[in-house]
Length: 393
Length: 148
Image (cartoon, rainbow over all chains, first blue to last red; front, top):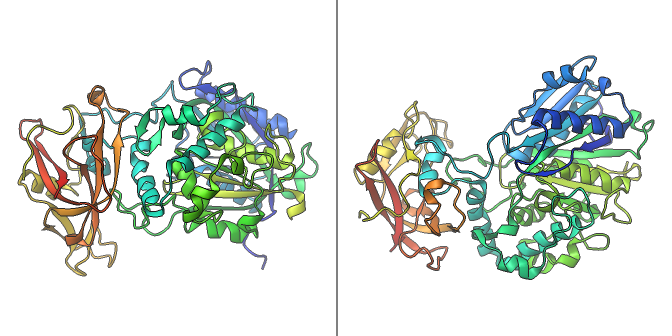
């Protein structure tokens, strides 16, 4: 019996996105944005959009695959998948689900997509407005603990306290995203650089997060297309293979009211070992990382849990020169990511991971054979994935 | 011990039990100035927040037990940016996550009373302070913390 793995079985052959907007500024309906991103990905892949036979998304994306399939006139729908829970933590898991469907013969051409028009619907960063509240939020909202930033700040505070991590380490993560966005015309923060003084002087949102430690809220859509590896070789772009994908969370990560046993964590303690085992690589083999920044402190813990440095080494490792393309030790968020390219709920990170392997990034590494994407720290479930060039197979 | 003026501005969501009543004993306990935590009758394990089953031994036979309102700050944050209209002009406030040694270190969320600009230390000892909102509709009580 063949080993149970996705390694090398599928490839990402097309990527596409819409223009990225500040929240509330998209001129198009969210559903239309989804269609535009999917069509752009199909065009990039050189495939007929009618051949798409599967859809995968996450975080309760509002754009139903059956409606999309009908609107696009696809020939048939064979796979309609939603990753349950975890918000942006589902990005790599959605790719994993798409890959599993393709590798397992459930579908031949699956698009992974995410569309958000926060101006047309509710914003993520606002607290609940109802008069009464029950369930887990009843233990939090009456104390003014309501938004994602407020929910995760105490995890980061505890981690920084325990390991002596300084604010400058978080700052370096923010600076890296903004640095890379300055060479990326797609980025919402293109032409709006950040320096140490601007970071230090920015207001607190919730300690330990300054304004620039927090992601943007944006409108737009992004999509990528997964097909069997053997088909990828006949398509226009250099194939980008999936080496591994892993999602989930460790023991009782969903325990109520901040009682998860491993509290000061990005939730990857059990997820990352599965990822490396499937991909057959080690942290030292990874050339470039896109790591979901809901908040910089989550990136700090994600990188630790993926084995790039020990917690005690965070202050030494997290310096801007180590984190920037092309020659940093670990180039990070090379498109600008959620902080400075677009908060496309993280899916822009998957697209950037593909671009690096293809050699098409606006902050390109000389060699990017092994490209990692980490989705949604501090939530549950989270997920991460590793892409590779032909040379890695 | 009860507090005087409410720590946060009025108008935040009022906590109520779920339609299935899972957390109702907790909220009723607070109104009486008692801090109740779930404890398994079968294995004596503590758990928080409330659930219908003991996560250690899978017993459904759970009890609500009053615990001493003494704890340690496990983590904290100071909120500056308001995300609710009621807090628009409030200014900064401190949220603490407190572990309760008397209940196997389960953690509870509350506000740390006192100067919102105060330095906060992880590990500091705190005592519970009940903030009663008897005139609210529906009435409710919050459990805050002050340095012990």
